[in-house]
Length: 277
Image 1 (cartoon, rainbow, N blue to C red):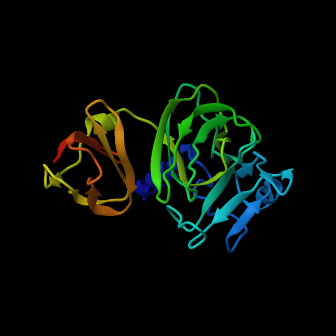
Image 2 (image 1 turned 30 degrees about the vertical axis):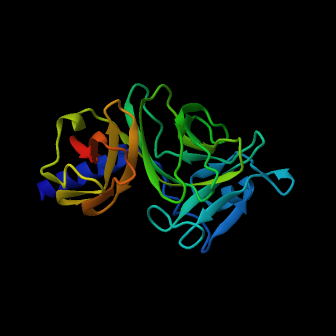
Image 3 (image 1 turned 90 degrees about the horizontal axis):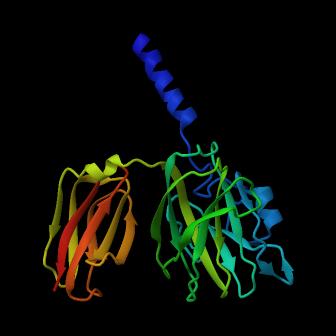
C-alpha cells in the first residue's frame, strides 16, 4: 500500500510541475467541421487557450482570418484531427496566435519547442515563433521558419528563458498572400543528455545509394526526426515520422556527395555518414 501512495505522489508531482502548451494540437474548440476565415473575435470565442491577435486583412477590414481545418479541408492535419491555418498578405498585417502554457517559463531554464508546418499555397511565406507575457502581443522572437509546399515539415527550437513568459506566439510573415498550416506545438525542458545517448540499433541500406535509403530501427518510435546535412552543415532534408520502425528516404534529388544523416527522438541522437552516388 505504501508503494502505491508513493507512485501516486510521483505521478501527481509530474503532472503538476510539467510544462507544456495547453492546446498545441488545436483539438479543443467548438467546431464540428472546417471553419474558414475566422475573425480574431470569432476565433477567441470558440477555441480554448489560444488567442488570435494578428488581424489579417479580410473583406475590407483588419479583423483576422484564421482557419480551423480537419481532414479533406485543403490539408490533412499532421497529428490528431485538427490544425490551424494562418494567412499573410502584401500589407503589414498577418494572422498571429498566442498559445497558452500550463505554467509560466522559469527564467534561466532551458526549453525546446517542437512544431509542424505545411503550406497549401504555391507562394510559401515564412512564419515567426516567439514568446510573450500577454496574449495580444507577439513578444520576443525565437526565429523564422519556412514551411514546404504540400507536405508537413517539423522544426525544433531550443532556448533559455529570459522572462517568465506565459505564451508561445506564432505569426505569418507579411509580404505576399499565402496560407500556412500549423500543428503539433509542444514545449518541454531541454537537456543535453540526449547528445550522449544513441539508438539501440540502427541499420541503413543500401549505402552508398543512388536513390532510396532504408532506415531500420530496433523498435517502433513514437516520434523520430531525420535530417540530412552536407559536410558544410547545410540541411538538405528534414522530416518527422510517427509510430515507425522503418523509414524509406528518397535521395534521388540530392546531388552526388557524402552527407550526414542525423536521427533524433526525445531520448537519443545519432549521426551516420551516407554516400549518394
